[in-house]
Amino acid sequence: MAALQVRKRTKNILMFIPNMILLCVRLMTDPRVPKTEKALVAAAVVYAVIPLDLIPDMIPFVGQVDDLYLIGLTLLRLMSVTDPRVVREHWRGGGDVVELIGSATLVAGKLLPKKIRRVLTSRVEAPNTPVGKSDTMARPLLVERPVAEPKTVQ
Image (tube, rainbow, N blue to C red; front, side, top):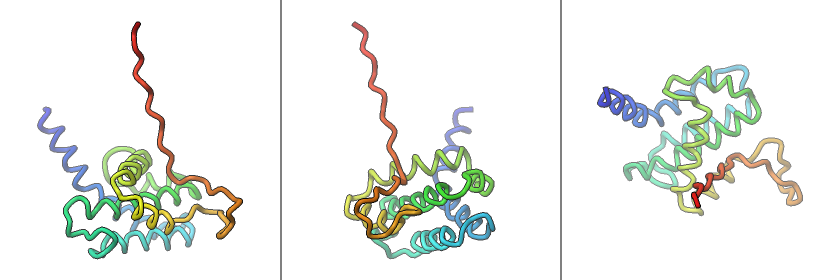
């Protein structure tokens, strides 16, 4: 039984980025998704598919981290302007896609060098944020949850 679970989890991990790309393609055809979000999702898919980008995809694992981060940011932005149920309807992978996107984006962001993370984040500007307004704080696209400190028994 344990071997079956390991095999299923391994398949889900290996299929995560392809499933994310398929999710993006499905979202681009959904009339409930605004045109601006469709354009950003399309750009993220093109970035992920093209092998030459900030971190070349020819480098195993590391080459896909920037793709995952950009797709994740784009989908987080999309979910901030549409109902997350729209994204859930198009997901064909395992688990809750909303939680997966948040977690995967957070992990990918931590694995990326700061300069690359900044470049990619600047490409996915928070919605409803006036461009060039330094006095306006943009709503964060990704917020890290604090980790509870283990309680010590005295």
